[in-house]
Image 1 (tube, helix red, strand yellow):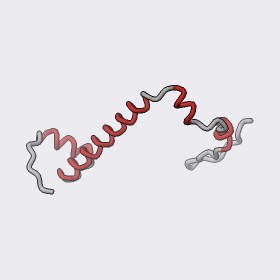
Image 2 (cartoon, rainbow, N blue to C red):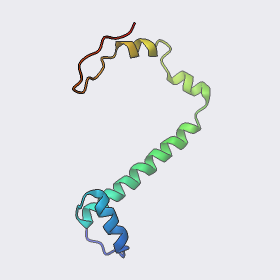
Image 3 (tube, rainbow, N blue to C red):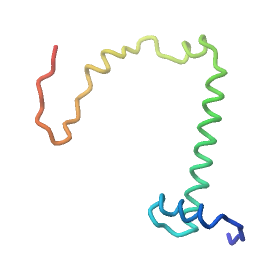
Image 4 (cartoon, one colour):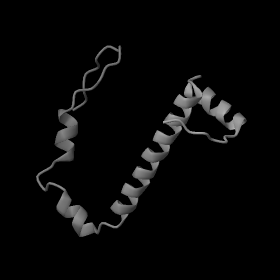
Length: 87
């Protein structure tokens, strides 16, 4: 969609630099997407803050064992030699 906007040129240039030198259109699109994503996250956090402790407790599986889950994980090496795990 074509749209005429009055945008602060210096602000747009700074945003383009941060975005990696993309076009003005791509920079504005990226900024709008980020704005919507952040707004959605804030809305979700506000909704989560309204949940009572009883509702949070009911949302968790009582059979879930965090420590068992952590010890069952395999570590990522990222190019390092594996070290023996401490018991």
